[in-house]
Amino acid sequence: MSTDSIEKLYKNFGILADAKDKLSE
Image 1 (cartoon, one colour):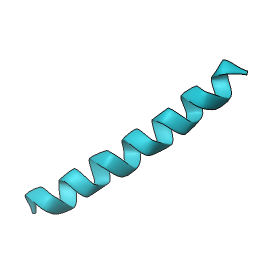
Image 2 (cartoon, rainbow, N blue to C red):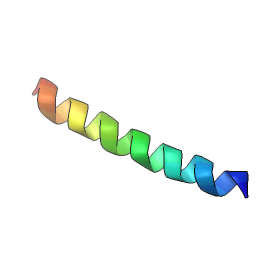
Image 3 (cartoon, rainbow, N blue to C red):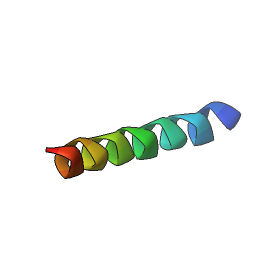
Image 4 (tube, rainbow, N blue to C red):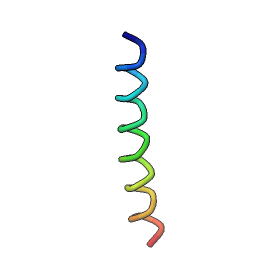
C-alpha cells in the first residue's frame, strides 16, 4: 500500500531533520 511508503518517507524525513538539527548546533 502507498501508506507504507509514505510512512517510510516520513521516518526518513524525521531522521534528516534530526541530523540537520545536530549539524546546526
